[in-house]
Length: 82
Image 1 (cartoon, rainbow, N blue to C red):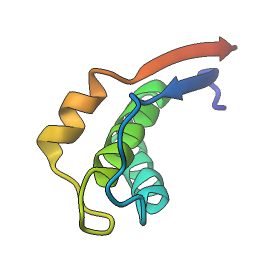
Image 2 (tube, one colour):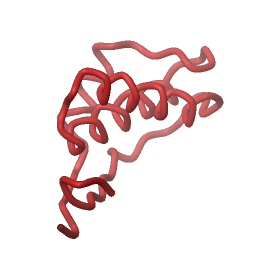
Image 3 (cartoon, one colour):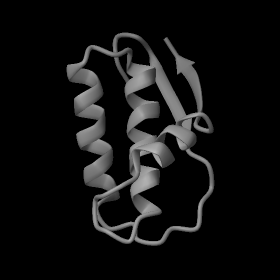
Image 4 (cartoon, rainbow, N blue to C red):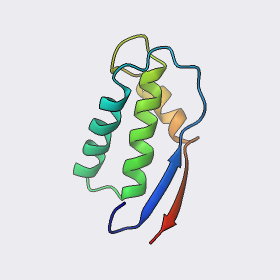
């Protein structure tokens, strides 16, 4: 929910290797995108991509940026309200 509207986003389904730290990755990535003044929808897709990629890494809160970039292409986002 933002002044740009309300969005719903869904990452692709994955087989998680290690979900520990994914929530922290999501919040941190969203904050980075927000600080870069990206639109809310892009902040959300970026954050979901990074968090999903972190679930595919054995390390806690770590992810491969190339994997996150591929996931980013697969995130489904929809504006559900103004």
